Structures are given as structure tokens and as C-alpha cells.
Image (cartoon, rainbow, N blue to C red; front, side, top):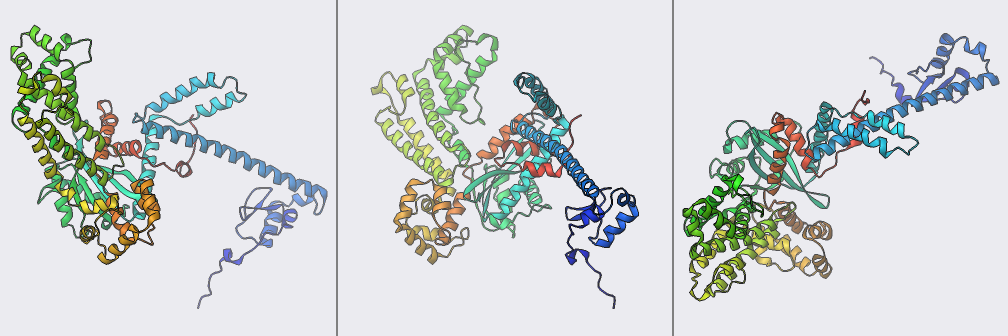
Length: 612
């Protein structure tokens, strides 16, 4: 039987300090190194060092005899020279690393500002020009300028830096998702400047004690954009190499409500529900889109009124050289733009006297006649007031980190306001309709019936549109205020397959929580997410934490997707239309991420060199 091969590393050999004088060797990095030729010996044995010294440097002992002061001085000199050389090289490497890190930071800021990679050279030239004046009184001015001149900021370098930063951010994100217990998705689709459909996928999860919202990916849909196509692109991403995203952690999916997303048979949500690897999850339309759909005008007098206002504005804007009044221009109305209708009507009412004069001068009696009709102007004024209220709601619902319970509260409050508005308007009380009040010259003869009917229809539309989200009301109420929720109603709701919580444990823990006076006070003092992540102990109330975290993980809207598309429009503008899909994703991730790239690690992976 063959003998086992020796492993020298396991023999625990130790460098003998006497060998430094005997053979001019020093221990560097755990290896014996000859101070004369600076070669290292693999095996730390006295015989190996002696053989190297006698065979390669036989004259050294003649010139510097053993145990002499001359030999001692020479060895110390050789050791000092080595350390000086090593310090010098370390300084050079450190300087190059610092320059490379600075280059990464500039590229990071360029990407965050959504600027093109060509801005790098411009910034470098600006740095150089500023440095002459800024550091004129510094003794090391020349050294500073020399360092700036070495910055690597060519367009290709900045592009590579942004790609590496994006890869690092994505790697961090995947690790964070893997460490989290649950996550939710928000999906929306839009087209870029080259008419390529892009699917924005955002993820929300709990990281430590904070809920995080980050762009997971941007998927180009180069063919059709049916539900099957979106599903195929999405699952190819999730099941792609190196992703390691556990879909069993999925809690909810929020979409824009398009047929390709919510179609009963072939929509994305339906296809995801059929996947055996994906557990039961919540799905609902974006609350922002729901609110906008509710505010869309149906047929009838109000829609005809809005159409007439739009035609009037378009006519004025078509005569660009002749509508430059001292007051700012009218705003063009577009159905797809948030707050558009309210802005249009507000501006239209403010410029009404000027608009009438302009139409009269142009001889457009067909457009002028409605503006002189009391009923028509009452309609315009009523629409102006209503859209102001809708815009106020819309603004409350916009923004990042909007949690589902609070957004539903805003919607419920608006529904209650609609009841109040209808009741007061029926009594000819114009408290919440200031513009309409300004147009009604004879309140006694004013008939509010049509407007009250519209307000009631609007409320019914809200109730219908938000029915799917309102089905979660007991759990949302529990998450918002566990001390005031109905235990029976909540415990029934949490037994659904979405929560997978034992009812008995939930009820007992909820009763215990409701009788905890300390936590009741903390609930009044802290924000909702802080209360559940920091104050309520998971070991004590595991069932409650599980339900609350799932609800707080849900997206309330696809606002983050919409904001990403706004950034995409800036990044891939007509001037940068040749951006590849990969680089568009990299730039968008860098521009929208709240994470910080690991600059030190990125530099460590680089073979650093200065700009020439």
C-alpha cells in the first residue's frame, strides 16, 4: 500500500530568528525570503535556506564573515531596503486604488444623476480647471492636480464602472431577498424612446428593521406584450442562473390592471396562480390606477363639457404665435398624465376672460357660445372643484414607502367626503365647491341634482374598484391598530391560505398584545412599520408578526414603476436611443437604488491603473 503523501503545510514549521544572520533570510508573509536576491523558499527548513545561501551567494560570507558586526550591519541594511521598497510599492498601489475608487464614485454620481457616460471627461476637465484656483494656496497643489489628472473617466471607462456598480447592487439585492422571509412585487409596462416595451419589476421586503423597495430588473419585451409573453419573460428571469430567488416567499403582486396583467385566463396573474411552485398570493390593481379610473368621465353632459374645453385649448395652442398672453400658457390635457385634468381646468378658469376675448377675435363662435352659457360654465366649475379633490387624493397616494393600510384609509376618507359633498350640495351649500360658487349668481334657481348624482356614482365606482383590496379590511385594521381590531373578524380572515397561521395561536397572542399597556403606548408613539419591526417581539408574538409583516410587505401602488419609467425617459432619450437593454437596466438600477455600492470591494477586484 502506497504511503500517504506528506503535507508540509501541516508540519507547523517555525522560522528561527538566528537564520536571519546565518543565511541572510527573513520571514515575509509566512515564507522565508532571501534578503540578497529576494527569492522565497517553499519549504521552511534550515537545510533548504543553507543550501540556497551557499550555492547562490557564496561570496557573501567572504565579504561579511559570520558573527561579525559588518555582517550584522549588512543584513539590517538589506532588510531596511526591502521594507522601503515594499512601502514604496504599497504607496503606489494605494494611490492607484484611491484613484480607481474616485473614478467609481464619479461614475456612480453620473449614473445617479441619469447623465450620459461622456460626462466623465467633462467633469475631469472641470476638476482640473477648478483645481488651479481652488488649491492655489496649498503647498501640495501640484500633487492634487497630478492625482486629478490620473482619474480614469473616459466614456468607455464610466460605462464599465456603471456596469460593475449595477452588478454589485444587484448581488446585494439578491442576498437581501434570500435573507428575507417574504417579498412582494410591483409590475408595470411601458415603452422606451425606441418603442421597445419594458417591464419594470420592483420588489419590497423587510431588511433588518426597515422595509426596502428596490428595482429588481427591467425586462425588454421585444415581441408581443400578451400575458403569456410577460409571464415567460418574468419566469425566465426568476429561474435564470445565479438568481436563487425563492418564489415560495411571494406575498403579493401589484399591477396596473391592464388585460395582459389581470386577464381571467391568460393574464399574468392567472398564469402565476397556475404555477405549482408559487404559493397563494394577494393580487390587486394599483390603487393609484384605480383612483384614476374612478375619476374618468363617463358619457353625459360632464364628458361633453370636458371635451369642449379640450377642443378650445387645443385651438388656442395651435395658434402658438398668437396666444402669448402675459399669463402663463394653458396646459394641454392628456388622459394618461396624472393630475392633468385638474391642472387644465384650473388654468382654464383663471384665464377665462382672456380666452373669451381670444375666441371672439378669431371668430370661433362655436367655441365661444358654450363659455357664455350658464349651465355649461356651471359644469366646468363643478368639474374644476371635483378634480381638485381628486388631485389632492392622488397626491396623498403617490410616493415611495406608502403602506397598504394607510392608502386604503385615504380612499375610505375620500368616499366619506363624497357623501358629505353630495349632501351639502343638495342643500346648496358650496363650502367645498368654491369655483362653482363663483359661477352661481342665483343660488335659489340653481339645480344641484345632476351634480349630486355624479358624486354618488363616483362613490359607487370607488367602492366597486377597491372591492378586491377591501376584502382584506379586517387584517388591514389589525395591522394598523391591533389594540382596536375585532378579534373574531380578524381571526377568521387570517385563516386563509395567504397567511397560513394557526387561529388559536393568533387569537391568544392578540389578546395578550391588547392587554399589554406598554406596547399600547409605544403604538401611539411609533410609526406603523417601526412598531411591528422593533417594538413587538417575534419570539413572544410570532403569529401576529407573521400576519403584520406580510401586509406591510405589500406594495400599495405601482408608483415606483411609474417613477422608474420617468427616469428611463431621461436616461434613454432620443439623444441616447442606442443604449442597449443591458446598459439601460444598469443605468436605471444605479439611478433608482437606495443601496450603496461596495466601492472597496469593486476596487479590490480591479487591476488598478492610472489615466495616461
